Image: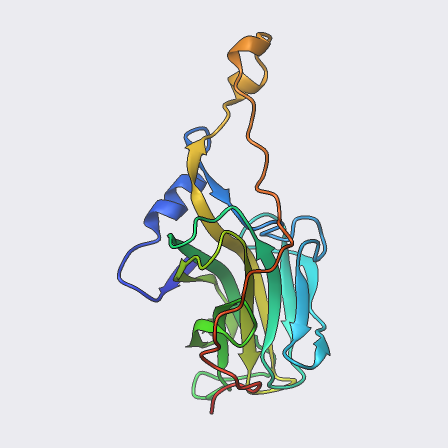
Length: 234
């Protein structure tokens, strides 16, 4: 089960529907290795803001999408991020960027306890240039994690290629960890190839499957930062 934490009034229903309708329409995702199904951080950079390489890694298990997901335990309260250069955008066009997450409080907490807050958000151009970020809470029921949560934002492309940062931080070092999966920036939809089409003996009647969006490593000009703090907000 997955809940949705969305920052505006419009719905993610379209994205979730086209993703689920096999053989109908498929979402074209600008993100490479969005669900970490390579088993590693191929196409991603994982850093602590202004503090070097972070300790996140990919594991197999009950993922939101596929069988692998990214996980990280926090040993400080600095902003940490996953970054990727994303291409194939149209300047000035509004997209939806999203990620599924689980916030896991590692201590043995009871319903009456108040675990420290975690934060999740997106930045573009640089880690400190936040679109926005949101305070999030652990999803527990009787001490057990029960679901993934989807966090989504509108993003207006400032260039055809942008550096996208998935930002996260927790204020209780050594007490919390965060799982991330299914990072999505939809470029629209296309018809999904059907099983009968893919196995047809008539090559002339089969349309080739479009290649995945390729990463352009050119970096866009960064916009002015809205937030410049290294640590999470008080």
